[in-house]
Image 1 (spheres, rainbow, N blue to C red):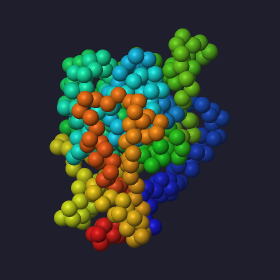
Image 2: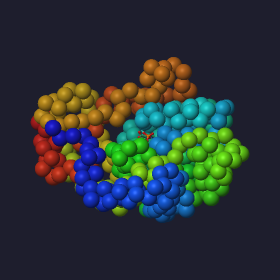
Image 3: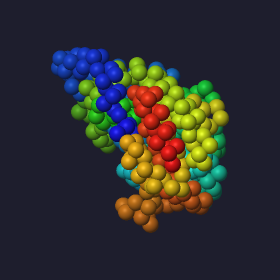
Image 4: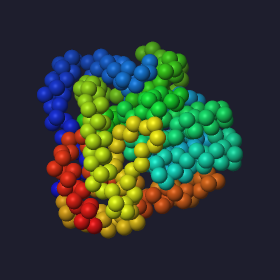
Length: 366
Ligand SMILES: Cc1ncc(COP(=O)(O)O)c(C=O)c1O
């Protein structure tokens, strides 16, 4: 079976270096917020071209802390999408704020700026916007940023699926007030466990986030503000410093796999991923689209190709959220339509040419 994703293959590709980093870290005798976290924070921020990185426990906490750091809490309305990992909406509620769900553009699967504008007209109190760069495709940042600025709202980029992606030559994560990354093992930059990082150019915000991630401490044992415990682990940071050196190479291979899929799957009547003009897509997922999604998924499995669905049930249709979330005035028709039709093919940097050809043949078999 060709897996849909394969984090072990990424580990094996860098095994000697990762094992050495683990040994170095274990021997250091310092296991919480030490040299490795500080080193990774600096290296990842430099990779983005930003001044500050704040390592946290996971991508969900990155969003929670970013929201809190920007002053969001009970009474704040935060616009985001429903065609995303449920974590995005979890984080808004965990910060005490109220999510307002915005529909997606059906071609890029990212926040529709027209629907966002309509939401601001219905709910002028919206204080922050969280576009998600889903599947590694940049959201329409120029339009979303312009709306957020005009409305005086903060812009938080959910970059959990878009490490290293660019729009108009500019790194994702550098457009917003703050950017949040998951480092979950299957992400384009993945730890061998949980992890997350927040990036910002704002020194005061970075200092606030560092306090918030550790009991509100600005110095040890002094809590001026109410914080939480959400630290990036030293061991994971040591591993991530190695993994970061392979990020661009991995993203380039993802693009090559996507180019092969584009060529091999053309003309079948399937919806293939579209790349936004000016975008450097990083293909966290290669999601195709067909009304016969469930049938195709079943047949591909029989032909030895594993697939996944990102995401089968939009957040507002999940039992925990049913009939209680605020939906923007444009509705969520495109979100619901996409959820019924999208299918993610195998996509990871270690996927070989032969496997890619097998996937293409299996899809072409109908
Ligand atoms: C778009 C998006 N946002 C947020 C998250 C949350 O990240 P984590 O699983 O590290 O908490 C994820 C990953 O699951 C994600 O894909």
